[in-house]
Image (tube, rainbow, N blue to C red; front, side, top):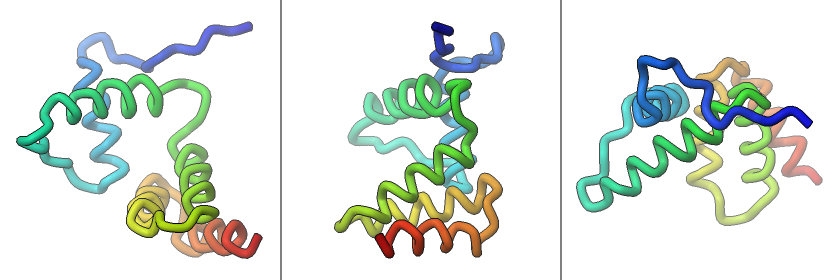
Length: 108
């Protein structure tokens, strides 16, 4: 079995920097550090965005489709769903296709 790389890293960039770039891509703008939880900011950037999202097993569009589909299938996720629908459009899926994903999952 092939071992997955945790974070596709540019040797000249830190995990924090790579995570920040991915988070900014998804959000469409840099996300400020929460002054009350700087450790959580570092954890999210280094672990969630670098170690998990930057892995080589899925591209950002496929990851966001899966995330939008999962959120659309659950109740009480309106805020997260709105963010991830925007992220999915920002990473390259046209808006009408984003809405098709939501409609398809919501209908079932």
